[in-house]
Image 1 (tube, chains in turn purple, blue):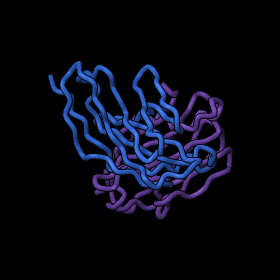
Image 2 (tube, one colour; image 1 turned 90 degrees about the horizontal axis):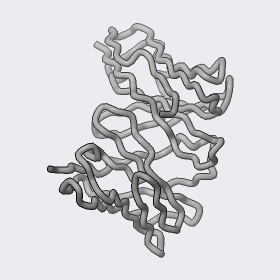
Image 3 (cartoon, chains in turn purple, blue; image 1 turned 180 degrees about the vertical axis):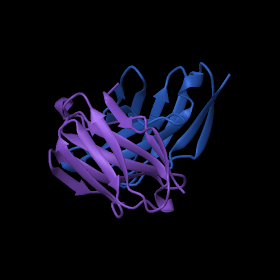
Length: 114
Length: 114
């Protein structure tokens, strides 16, 4: 258990509405990530953070923004949701204290955009 | 990061060893081999990683060929709960702030049967 909590776990929304997904960690890790998973595409990195207020884009960042105002929370925002953003979203952390680089994932947030 | 090739699916009898192969013929000297698995509807789970020596932990063993162009993940006594998609990934462990840029391919869907 990596102490990662994602919320909400399930959400249905309509096209054009804003959506924010929250990733909360309890172990004070520096690196946090947002992935999306879609059939036929596997897991793709959206954004990641390497510290408070330090974020960078991943491979599929268009249409998404992130914020990290404190170590424990990494927020993913869809400013105006589209049907193509229907997906399962996973948050992950790296336990840099162990210096092994592996990712630990949350349980996922399933988003449906109608 | 080097690309990997895995068989799309495999079956294994419960209690027997499951041997999951992975080809990574373009791996470079500083790239590690990581294995993850994803049980249906859950977040991916880290299993093991290695550079060139064989590795073993409480979950599995990793055998890397001498030329490092392929590896095998071994689950010594597969159980029904090991049914999952298994991902083989190679990446440079040293790229910390890009640690989330793991390229998840399609993986191998392992079915453990009674």
